[in-house]
Image (cartoon, rainbow over all chains, first blue to last red; front, side):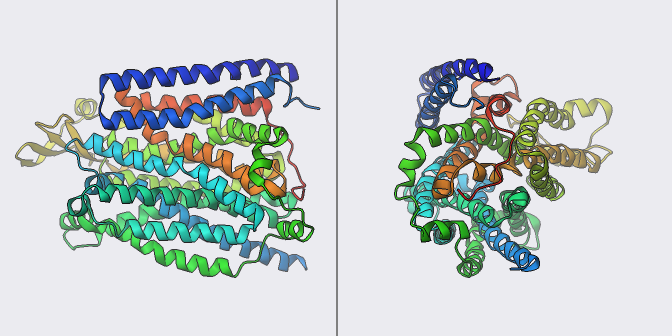
Length: 72
Length: 488
C-alpha cells in the first residue's frame, strides 16, 4: 500500500500543473471570445482562487511521493 | 459529576452551539436563496443571466473569503479561547445580515448599492469562516471519546437546517404580504425580500444571550492553565510539515469532496430544478424543503455510525454514490419536465390565453406556460403530485449522500489535529473544501453550461470530477482508525 501511495504521489504532482494549465487556457479563450467586465471578473476570480490550490496539490503529491503518508 | 449531569451538560453545549451555528448558516444562505431577487435590486443589467452571474459572483465572494475568516478567527480561537471567538463571529454575522436588509437599491444610490452589498457579503463570509470550526471544536472537546461522532453530528445538521430555515422564511414572507398572491409576490420582489435579512437580528440576539452563558472548552482551559496554548497558531499549523501535510490531506482527501457533494445536493439541485427544468419558484423550493426534512436525521445516524465503524468509509461511500448517481438523477429531472415528450403521451389543454403566452395543463395536473416569443419556450412548470414526489425522492437521495459525507466530518477533522492549534488547523481545510470547492459549485456549474452549451448536464462534471479525485485520495491516504484521544 505504501508503494501505491508513493506512485500516486506522482499523479497528484502532475495533476496540479495540468489543472492549472486547463484553467488558464479556458479563461483566456473565454475572455477573448467575450471581453466584457463580467466575463473577465468571473474568470479572474476562479483562476485566482484555484491556482494556489493547484500548487497545494503539487505539495500534497510531493509529500505523498516522499512517503510522508506511509503507514508506519 | 454523575452520568446524568454530564449528559445534561453536553446537551446544553450542543444546544447553545447549534443554535448560533444554525443562525449563521441561515444568515449566509438567505442571500443565495434570493440570488435572482437581489440581482434585480442591486445589479443593473438588461440581461438576466448576467445579472444572475453577478449575484452569484457576490455569492461566491462570500465563499471565497471564508478561508480567511478561518485563519483570522481560528487564530483567535486558539489564543484567547473558543467561546469568545465564536461569540464574536455571531455578532459580525448578525450585524452584516441585518445591514444587507437596510441597503437602498441601485435605483436610489447607484453603484454604492452593489459595493456595500459586496462588502457586507464579505463580512458574512469572514464570520462564517470563524464560526463553524469553533462550534465543532467546542462540542467535540466536551464530548466523550466513544460518542464524538454522534454528538458533533448535531452541529453538522445546522448547515442544512439553516438552509431549510432560510427557504421556509422566504416562502412564508413571499406569500403573506398581501391577500392577493400576485400582489404579495410583487411586494416581496420590491421590498419584502428585506424581511428575512432583518428578522435575523432577533435570532442572533437570542443566540448571543445563550452563548454568553456558556463556559470555555475544558480542554482549552486545561491547556491555558498549563501555559501550553499556541502563541502563533497560523505558523504552527502551516509552517510545520507534520501539521501542514495533515491540512493538505484533510482538504484533498475529505473536505473538497464533501463540499461539492453538499452544494450539489442542496444548492445546485434547487438551482437546476428552477433554472434548467423551469419548475416554478415555490415548487423548486418546497421540493428541497421536504427532502431536507426527511433526510436531516441521517446526519445523526451516520455520525453515530462513525463512532462504531470509523469515519473514513462512510464519507468515501457517500462520495462514490454521488459520483455514480448524479448524472442519472439529473437526467431524470430533465425527462420528468420535458414538455414535448409529455405531449406525446397526453393532450395539453389551454386554460388561459394571453398576449404572447398560453397557460396549458395536462390531465394529470401538470401545467406550464408556453411562450411565443421567449427564447425559453416552456416555463413556470407546475408539477403534478406524482412527479412532485418523484422530485422530492431524487433530491432526498442527494441529501442522503450529503449526510454520509458531512455527518462524520467534524469528528474526523477534530481528531486529526492537536488541541493547541485545532481551531486554526481544522477551519482552513474545511472552509477551502466546503466554502471554495463547494460554495462555488452552482457558480462554476452555471459557468460550464455557458462554455459547453450542447449538454444541459455539463455543469455536473465539476462536482463529479472533484468528488472522484477526493474519493481516491481519501480511500488511499486516510486512516480508517479513529483517534480516541483529542486531549493532545
